[in-house]
Every structure is written in C-alpha cells, then in structure tokens.
Amino acid sequence: MVSTHNRDKPWDTEEINKWKIEEFKPEDNASGLPFAEESSFMTLFPKYRETYLKSVWNDVTRALNTHNLACVLDLVEGSMTVKTTRKTYDPAIILKARDLIKLLARSVPFPQAVKILEDDMACDVIKIGNFVTNKERFVKRRQRLVGPNGNTLKALELLTKCYILVQGNTVSVMGPFKGLKEVRRVVEDCMKNIHPIYHIKELMIKRELAKKPELANEDWSRFLPMFKKRNVARKKPKKVKKEKKIYTPFPPAQLPRKVDLEIESGEYFLSKREKEMKKLNERREQQAEKQVEKETERNKDYVAPSEPTYKSSNKSK
Image 1 (cartoon, rainbow, N blue to C red):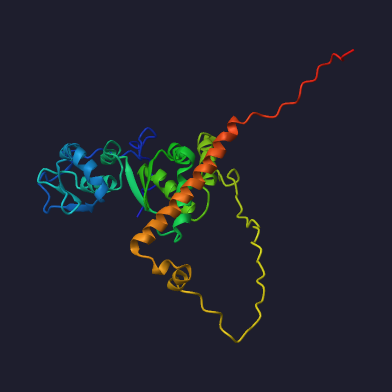
Image 2: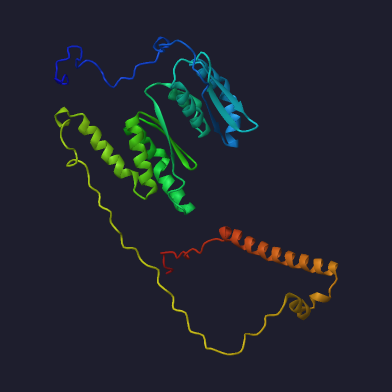
C-alpha cells in the first residue's frame, strides 16, 4: 500500500497552532445525555484552614456552578467533596475541581486556586518531607528554597511562569506543564543539598537562548554551565585527650544524701514555718545584694571624669 504520510496537506498551514487547547463546549458532547455515573473526589483539610474555607466557600460554590459541578464542605469530618451533576457536560472538569480543593487544603488562596479551572493551567503538589530525616537540616534547606525575603522563590516564579507556595512538608505549584517539570527538578535538588541558584542561572541562559531562532535546532549544552561537586575540606574538631585515671579496686565514696546535708546544717530539725522564714530571709539578702550592684552600676554614669589640672602660663615675678 502506498504511504500517504509525505503527501501534501493543503489544509495544514503554518498559521495553525497545534499546541492550542480548544475549549470544551456543550455542543462537543455528541450524545447530549448526562453521564452514566456520578464522579466525586474528597480531600481532607487541616484544622487551621477551617475558618478561611468557611469564608470563601460561597465563592467556591459559585465558581464550580459555572461548570455545573456540586461541592460540599464537611466541617465535622474536615473534608471537601466535589461531584458531577446531571448538567455536567465536560468529562475532564471534575479532575480540575479535584485539583482546586487539593490546592485550597494546601493553603493556596482562593483567587489563585480558582485559576486551575482554566484549560491551560495545571498544578503539582511536591512532597518534600521525606528527603531529609534531620528536622533542623530540613528547615534550613526549605528556607534556602524560599531565599532571603522570598527572592529565590520570586526568581523561580518569573523564570518558570508558575505560582509557587511552600507550606509545611509540601510545595504547591501552578502553571504550564513545562514550568511544573522545571520547578519539581529545582525543589527536589534543593532538598538533596543542591542550591537553587545553579538551576536559576541555567534557566536564565535557556531563556536568552530561546530568543535566538538560529539556535532552535542546535545543542545548547555548550552554552550551559557545568557545575562540579566539590568536597570542601572542613576542620575536624580537636579531640581532647582524657587523662587516664589511676585504677583502684575500691569504689568511690558514697555521696551524702539531701537529708544528711540538712542534718549537718541543722535545717532538718527546723519546723515548716522556720524553714519558710529562712528561705525568705535568704531571698531578701540576695535581692539586697543585687540592688546594691544595680545602684553602683547606675551611679557610674554620674561620676565626674578626671580632668587635668590647669596651670597658668604666667609665672609669678
């Protein structure tokens, strides 16, 4: 059979954008009938998000109603549910609604999270809690991802055209698919102790190379920086040599008990009231000593400095 692959296609012109995602309209549902079964997704949310979700739930319901979806907020169970209705015509919109409630549970504000219902927007929730076992190291690396005053995160958002939110053990990302892939690589490498600045430099170079059409079909690896991992020599702490103790077969002398010390000082034989009076007097003596120290410290500012004695230049005749 003759191949038709290389045959001329007069309808396929360069003006057609093959990557464009066409909007799904009610007339695209060929049958025009409701779905055979109801689809639903549920997501749990933390307790601290309850107040915010209650305040924005009317807006969430309104946004989902435009796509003929139903939603339920269960404060007793601490869950959000989205489901299709008999009027729903887009089979993929329920997956977008699932991403919406997932982002709301991860502290993404509603005005930003509702953008996930658009066709050209995707999201990813990156789990970073399992990369590092040491909690202090985990906090430092997570802060390294955010950067001073959030500058590192802002640079990543500008280069990848994504919205990034670091919250607890997850990083929520919204944007185009290509940007999501780059952000995931940067985040995972950051938690593996590779600084995000190296990836930011690489992304900046790629952005400049993409502007040059003559390099579209060339290999860019010669332009990209090659960072080698270096093991920096660190000073090892000096080991303090412990003095060898002389071996004796006899055990050390037994330390006196608290009761023995009280008997020696005579405090054991005092009554409860006398013990309280003694403690009170000791506390007052300490307060008086502290007061004297503070007074002397304050009076230092008022002591006149020593001045050189003035001698007249006129000699007595």
